[in-house]
Image (cartoon, rainbow, N blue to C red; front, side, top):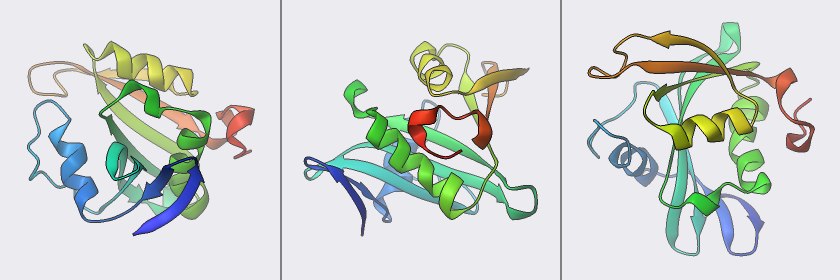
Length: 150
């Protein structure tokens, strides 16, 4: 299902393939992994899925959820792509806060999340079983102006 064209040959999609596609790109998960009470959206370029985001553990009462990103290429992360993906939790779900956990060794993901406004808030010791998880949070009022959510 097509959600939103964002320019060129790129568009945001939401369908049953996304959850497995994202899980298959995360160390320690299998393509059959499924987050409980989750939605997944992705970015496609032509017929190829190039990035995805799972929104899980959504709590409407606290206006918060967790997100998990995965990508097959580094060049997916344009401002338009990031804004389009984050519009789902911030605009459609009306979240005020997003939380993400990142393996301590995943320096690319850490840089990406810091670059879009996430702040490191803590460490979950052995949160990935064999490795610490770094806890990051992003409040809607702390998003960069180019995202247009504040």
